Image (cartoon, rainbow, N blue to C red; front, side):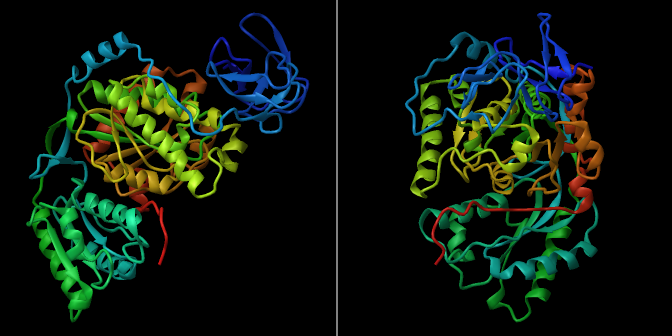
Length: 500
């Protein structure tokens, strides 16, 4: 196995695949030998050309920032000698490769295949048959948790689990902040992974059940029940009674063959490292392309982690309207930062930097590879549910729990979550952890579902794409992921406004 990777021929840095000690050397494909002038951690960058102060550092074939001092061949290139090139809100021009977009669109939906899912009355397909308890307000979180604990002893038939999705919102909110909470809650009430839903309210909250009803709209009355705790003499007794009705209705549901065009996958990364952009993220990008070839849908979010790579996505937009929507999403998110008095480019995180990611451009160029190569077909507002097949962009923050919950609320039945540092969390839908390196896969085998780090050991993307796709189909057909086995379920709503 090589000790380094040069991602693009124009790059003036390479990524160390293992730790390099001072004095050790590597030999490039052109025959040049590079000696490390200092210790360089695995996943970090070493200069293979002299870079004068103020000149661009090139990785992935793009500038990831500029040098803040003269960097000589063999130097460690990281946060101590690079600064981002990004600043302010930009103007963009639509420069599509029209022939490539047309060719890719012609291949969408050309593959045929099935998985075993639960078909709902509205035609949507769930990959789980769970009973969900959705609190309208944080005040009833403990009641929701207690109901779920008791009701899990009552499940039968095809029901997987009873889950309470607690959160801290639903009251003391104003304006758009409150609207977003109501939208996310109503999205989850309609999610096809839920065979039944108990909506649990307190009664006096801003987003009480009566207020929430217009957001919910039409719903399956056989599969959704409502309980207002302040109107109940014994909310536990009444809650269990309603859950028994939901369990009875959903327990007879059976998996059946469903077209893979019904599958919607969410694309997310967290705890990224220097290997994420060269193993796990491009692997997931190939999965996104394949799902789309089956007529399915993928959703990419984490808008702040598109900054610096956004023009790549913009030029893949299917038409000028979609391009304009993408520009509005990017610049609108930048304005969100500036209105809060925060720097737009305060990223990456300490864990990212420790893993070898230096600037936001470095992070974004790796992050956006999860989107694959197919055209951008649609742009979603936060809380909006997709009805467009193909690649969708979703407005949501980079925060793992907020973004993954947004993917679920947009309709994703499963989230593919790449990581180089590891994380145990799971969102409202099955959350598949894909490790960018084998060290974290070995260390946290109780968290990690798939090892993309095998690419560093000589496995091909083609081999691993087939293996990962097969695992996704098995998961969609009922195979449990590590976080599900552990009983982990998380939900987080994006808090954007004043708390009263």
